Image: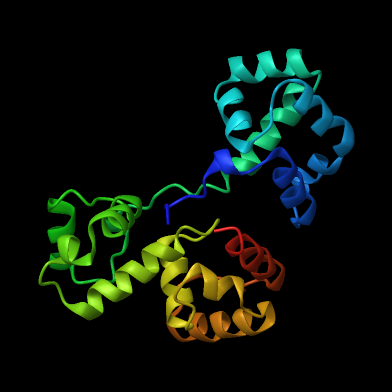
Length: 215
């Protein structure tokens, strides 16, 4: 399984369905405006997959060109770009997993595995033994699970740690979670350890569960 979903396999209809199903943050609520017209215009402009769209909005110059070709406002295309790029979380540096024994992390980094994606891809392609050698099994299992969790939108290494300690050790487990139960567990663990300041919002947890279903 790749670190990110295959954008070439996601149709424009799939993009629309996800936008419609998402509890958008207020600043992106405008993405729900004139859906029929906007997606018809994108199709007419030759945009049929998420890969097509991402390729055509990589730069302000490309956005301007697509706006002219499709008749869609550049501001709308820019906002849609920001939304869909959030579906492809940036790999986190392994150095950010500061709660692990530094020597174990340094050994991986010295082998060239500097990010969660490099670690994940190496295990997928070449196997755990190639990556971890004689490393402690508990360390390998925990780091891999937490790296896997960072494939979910909005999940940082620290959030992955919190999810893992709450018993949610994979994106599939988060996707299958009851949001209220997950929120309660996260709050309990955070209160015990103070990983984050402030209150964990149930609405955000509902968004997290939904995002995990697309991994």
